[in-house]
Length: 304
Image (cartoon, rainbow, N blue to C red; front, side, top):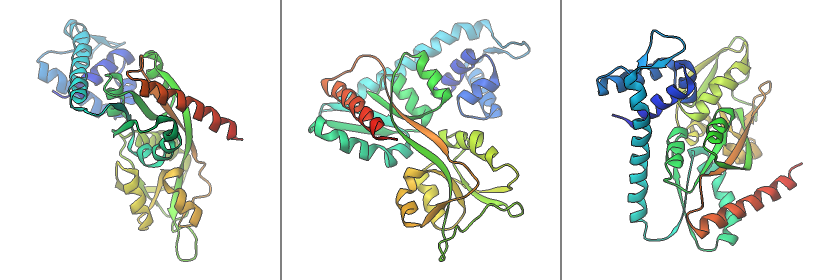
């Protein structure tokens, strides 16, 4: 059995429909349905009444729901205890999405470091749902993430403290040729070669939902998928296609003209949040939150 099946089942019970639950889990509905079926096959019982609307759980499903929540809490709680037992040096821990670990976190920590002293900061990375699962399970002190309406609603239900610490933009960009012009342009006749995040990745789902519809009548063709933004960037610089990337990921290339945004496609605004759940587990964690709050206020005051 996979823990993601348990998260899927809990999401299904909360959302009340396969389509909404699949969207909340950033997977396609067919893939989501297969995962629920896999859980049922593993347990040997039906959990959902598929011939009723609105959706209802079977008696077995109702009985298993609380057990699923307890199983997840136990699994992640045990993992947290084991990890803490191996940590000989006290410090604080964060988990974030891979893109933010590269683009945002280093400079943010550098600004905070004078107030933190020599305290150890452990940074783990995981894709959105993995990061959320570890955060909710209490395996880390903080979650650093891109935030949208879906994630905001989930975090609000958990009474999570959220702090807006930065912003970025997801832009459609292309490498330039020897003349300094984009290698690829919007053209109603020529398909645009797209380098994409997988659909089940956070930014991939965002691109599918918000960015691709903005291309309107522009034909496009997927040429490669890569879960890592750095990988998409490397392929983009090789001239293999265009990609929707955080502007911070290609900041230097934009400044030098090696990469240009394509005209006609409006960048998508991204909000970056720092989140914590429950009481701070150390003096260093509390100091990190307070200094992050001060820095966020200062940076907000500096923005026009």
